[in-house]
Amino acid sequence: MRRLIVAFLALMLLFPASALATDLVVSDPVVEPCPLDDAAAQADLKRPVGASCYALRGVVTNPSKRAIVDTDVFAQIIDGSGEPALANRARVGSIGDVPPGEFPFALRLSIPAGTPGPFSVRKARARGFSSPVRTRAGKDDELLPLEQDLSS
Image 1 (cartoon, rainbow, N blue to C red):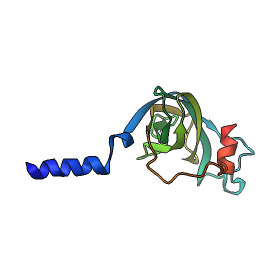
Image 2 (image 1 turned 120 degrees about the horizontal axis):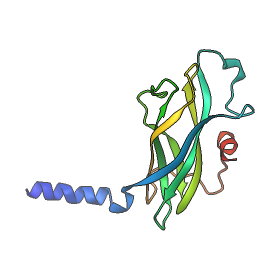
Image 3 (image 1 turned 180 degrees about the horizontal axis):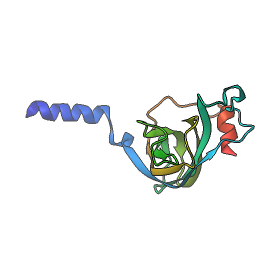
């Protein structure tokens, strides 16, 4: 019993409560094709093999008074035939920090070419932390061109 208590206390020191994950609500999720002039478009590869660029857009709600950081988005993307478009993949991407309130987001998805549309989204949710769990980018770091294209 004593070993169990010592192990529990050691875990509490290694993983403080401030870094516990927080679930967030995702609303209005939609999958739409990336713009034709998108930086991720690969005109040479637009054929039945490969992947097609899509964007998952929606709004995530943070009900707390503090920002949630290192936020991941989870969803099931369903194709036109009712099958998962991204088999064996629940995490669809990361949206970084989510300030208090409603926060619009967009994630780039690579869906196998030839997958029948239209696409629907099921079980969309987000999960983040009250303190950083990964190495943080500097405040002066710029968004990547792909992130800039989706943020507009």
